[in-house]
Image (cartoon, rainbow over the protein chains, first blue to last red):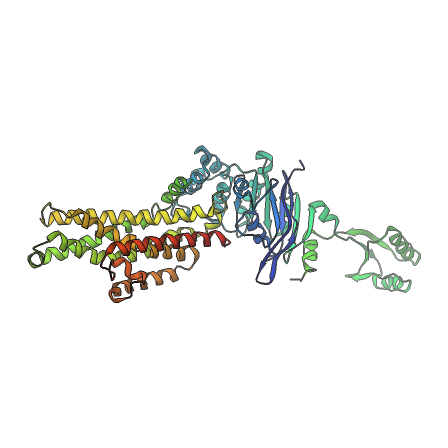
Length: 304
Length: 237
């Protein structure tokens, strides 16, 4: 299970003087859905273009399936399917012909076209010009194209960008089924954490070209510093009492918030409040949502 | 590999105007000359009475050379635009095919299509000459020369146009350069011999059309070579 599929080492891409991608060490293992997350302009697409050999790294190396992309680009790309940003298609051709144009190049069997059409549920629309497709259908066609070559690795850049909610759900279900049914490893980029949250097993967060977090989603959740929220009767005087004993707390909407640093300290604070005749209605742990953690992480690097 | 690329390229130009234009070019030229000769049949047969076929071929090539240069401009731009329209380059070039071969495929497609145009021009000229009752003593060698030499001599322009059309997303630039070039070549009789826009006219100081063809082929190949390297080196947008 722990076969490394993608590994980059100090991957850097410089445009002008700016490092758009700055020393990124990406690691994707077999069977993972790797969520590649970052705000717009963080360097996601540039990284993905380098993974696909569309752009050349300024510095650093990329190994996919254990092979160096500079040296064995074509043998790597044979096992990779991709969808980069907006779908590419030939509008004057129908869905079948669009797939055929790529199939010929890949030298895949003709039966593969019907197979991928049914995976993305476009069999009925196969003879319609793609120009008239909805964005969701075009995106599905893009995924069908990516699947033509029987890939072991799918690289999807913002596949749900610009789709309506039902389109997003469709694509999401499609992507989630891939590793299970076809044993494909997937790297998927997005600027929405909620999107990644519902699909990915691993996350990498990139901001201003730098990888600022890379681990499993549950590790990301653990990172959230929780606070203890106390609901007491006279909140303001409780706050003053605590302050006079040297405990700094936050007073917000008649609740006290204490940093969850040590259990010992929490116990002392509660004891102090009880001794001073405050009624404690609730003592609970407040966790930040993933979205907040994400914003905190990228906020450190420059803010919104 | 290159045969598969060509099969894919031919599939992609389906239902585009490209094939129509490949037919329209030569038939337009032949049609206009049919009109010309039909209208002034007595006068023109008197002028060319010693060499009826030569007169016809000369008249055809006078129209066909500017048409060819316009055709080069438009066809290369349309072929490049198939990929530009939805930025299909990123999809095409992420496939396990070399960028050099993809680019070579585009060049080959252009050259093949234009070759068909020239062939149709030759066939059309013969048909027109026969209809005009110029006899069956057709100067085939001269006909083939006048139909294909201008095309071979304009290879540098084919290379230039396809390079510009593929590297630039905005087709206004290659189209403008191509059209200005085509107009320029109409007046290029007095230009110095080194100007490539003069070469399709097959006129040079030595009075040997083959020189224009040879220099065109060599320069064209050189430009193709440079443009393939340039395309291969550039990042895909």
